[in-house]
Length: 166
Image 1: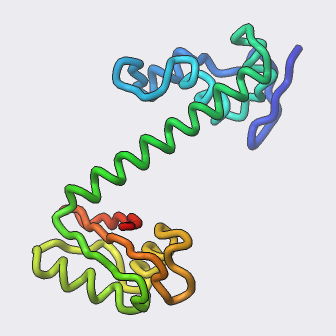
Image 2: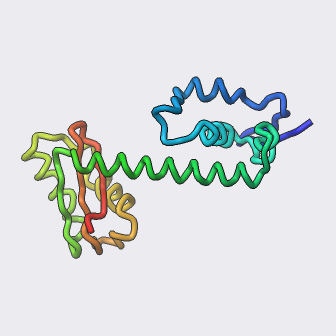
């Protein structure tokens, strides 16, 4: 009997979730997804704590192959997220270019003023907005300084999107 670790307990091989049900519940459609079916299967099982060796046995392949499939799937998901963020930044009704050298503490006013002019409500307080911008900008913001130009977009529903604008 096989055992694998989940975040909360150890389950037997008989308790491995049915991958077809998992994909169906999540609404996976291979014709509409950037993921292959195999990548979706591996991610669905890994997200439920199934070890790569158990997945390899279930799929009739090697653990190394499962590892490769998982890495490719996670890379594809990250690329898809990046593409969505790019598209949202392009279409956001509010776009604020924040120049290198700007004090992070000045960013909320820039964003709020642009949102007021466009009639868009921001879903963040000034401290929350600064944190969101700082976190999303990565090393483009260091401490209070915007080191590299960034674009702060605000969608019509008030969600904030941050992109490097180099």
